[in-house]
Length: 125
Image (cartoon, rainbow, N blue to C red):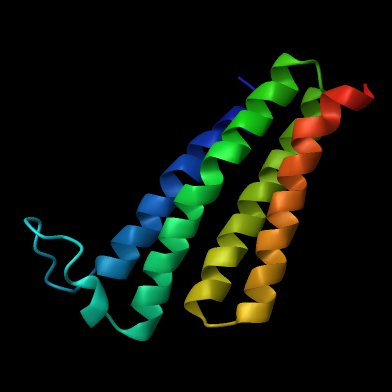
C-alpha cells in the first residue's frame, strides 16, 4: 500500500487527537460534550478549533491522494507530497494552539497548495 494512503489514515485520525487534547482534564460530560467548550482555557479552545479545521480540510486531501494515484500520478511524488501535507497540518495545529496566527495561516495555505498540486499531478504526466 502506498505511503500516501497511510498519510490519509494519519490525517483522518489527527483531528481526534486534537479533540482529545482539547478536552483532557475538563471533566467532559459525555451527555453534553460540546457544552464544556466555552469554559476551556484559551489554548484548549484553540486546540478544538484546530480539530475542527482538520476535519474541514481532510476530505480534499483524501480525494486528492486517491484521484492522483488512481489517475496515474507518480507514486513517489504523491507519497512525498502526502507526507509534506501531514507535516504541514501538524505544524498548523501546533501553531494554532500556541496562538501564532500568521505562521498558522501560512501552514494552512501551504497545505492547501500541496493538496492542489497532488490533485492536478495526473494532468502533467
